[in-house]
Length: 485
Image (cartoon, rainbow, N blue to C red; front, side, top):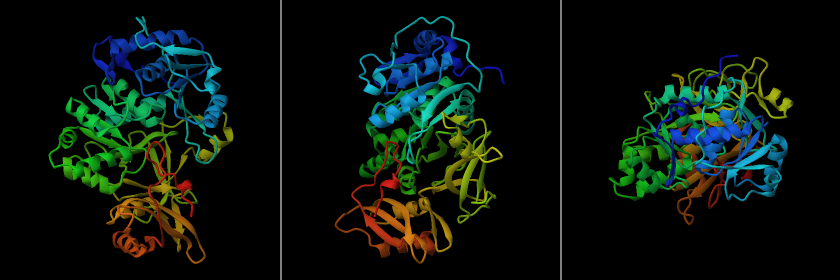
């Protein structure tokens, strides 16, 4: 085992430099070290803690304290339903719950001992010695789309390897100031959005709730990076398109060093609208709860809309067919992404069979994500194996590329693609369309011709269904299983 290293070296510097800002509340590195260190000292030999993960400084202090103490933390979505929460509490069996003073907790957590997080606590004295890289750091629960949520046990090495690989890919350093408005119970908002700046010794400004006005304000006031999900960037694109060319939002985005989108695919149309208005391109990256980050467009590389870039430093990535054989490059060479490296989780908590099924015999993690690879190594995600791989007329087709083509079709405001049984083709391609004008939606002929002109004739939709909006989760991902004929 490697020697333990500090997750957050800047905490030991007792610095007055800003670390966290949530609205009008802020903590310097010295104040964060005092508050988190004091709380860490009280955790002692606690087996595991739940953290009521509101978008507040208390959540950041609670998670950092648990990491300093070497106590695995379970971030809990404050908007979670009662049944899922009861499952997570029973499955993870936390010894206590950390929450902000005054937070009302649901009944599933009320039976646990509770510690209120004091962001003004301190001084902490010497920070505790940290455990080794394979020690569990966080237990983050998956979305549970195919059953009860599974707790992915993330070791400390997964956090450090991902955050250090992003430093390499993005040139991320202590001078960067990140702005975002993401929830703090998942990988994107918590690990990348809070722990990432703290590991670099930089700072983060959390908006609380997303608004284009908030983004413009913080980027204009010295923030250098923006993290968002496609829903947020779509609203930015809409705001840029609605206003005159030289708006405060456009100016603020133009001055940003890095605009990053993740958690779902950003439509090419929104890429193009933002780039046209600001001169800045949004870069995408690809990761999962179980793997943290796998690929990214590099800050010093070529930005290419519709791709998630190249594998990060230290990440092994291969694309394989149904028999496990590597597939070549090219737009029709669709296969499943498999990865391995220090960024991976160690297990699904209490699920040895599920853990074993997730890995190949030679140690590669089966992501379930389908992709193609360009000749120069850029990866393009085309969908999930379970919901987005369509087998039609002898072809394997990814829904994602058709969705991007449909989003560029006149009269389409939003689009999703699924496959349905077809006696002749095996599966036919179905387009779910939110039209720009519900009184005059694009016809199936118009949609099919548009897709065939951009991709290939066998990728054209055969059926269209119109909706007023697509079902999406909190991260902006389309919930395909809710799309029923």
